[in-house]
Image 1 (cartoon, one colour):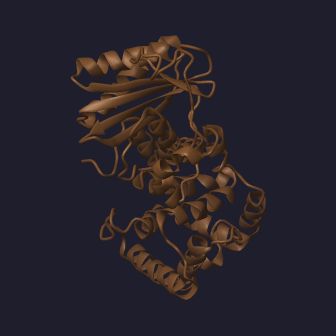
Image 2 (cartoon, helix red, strand yellow):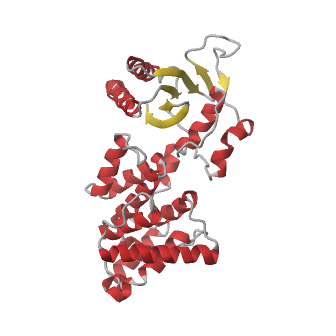
Image 3 (cartoon, helix red, strand yellow):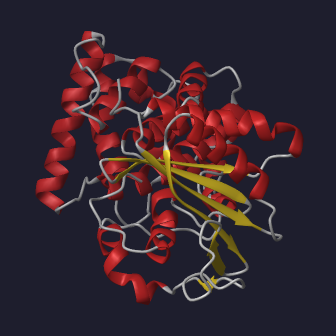
Length: 345
């Protein structure tokens, strides 16, 4: 999640914000935050590597900070055992210092406590560490995130489970098998006129009751790359170019946009990013592995554009597990690996 404009006055407040930036509570990992103009500009998280990969991982993390032309950085290690993160913390901070990037602080979190590696004053940083503060004690710091609908999950595994196949997926797959890969609604021009209404229902349903028939049609329609790209334009109208799409797809984009606006006006539907992601997640959970890659990649595109790299990553992980050759998933994975963001050239 992209950081809202907030002021962090202490390490405790920083540690309270990190799970909201990532979408989950990090464990057995290092988090590197690039700062520019005293603002959090980039947040990276990676699992603590095996010793033989330490140099490779440190170089990748520093490369991304360097690309941001960061003035300073914060580095946090999350440990299962004492000093487990220390080698990577040292490797990263040494490289950052060599690049002229100031190190604001180096923190370690272990067993519900945190300590600073660069503070030796017992009154400030006791050797046994300081207990992490409960959310109620940092409510004012995280209020902006909570207002946006942020609710960090306990770990990355829980986040990844959100994009996996759900109970209704097999019913959707059975329906697709019975109706054929190209149902009547997609088989001819007349039938395709109904597709915007299907997508309007998929994207505006707010009670978690996505119909099996709608899910089947939506998933099948995404197998056409132009339709997938058209839906991305509908969801990210300020970021993607409508005019590069085929004329038929442009007409679909316009019709979907009209249908969604009608649902917004009639039913008071909220199409803010925090509201749309659960609907895309629901569609992905309605897909067996055979049909999931396009929907997962649409979710990843949308999440990446809105600053939720963690959700984009787990969606892409499943997409490439389902279809290792899916080109857009491969491209987006490369962009995430390189720390490329839509708000940067």
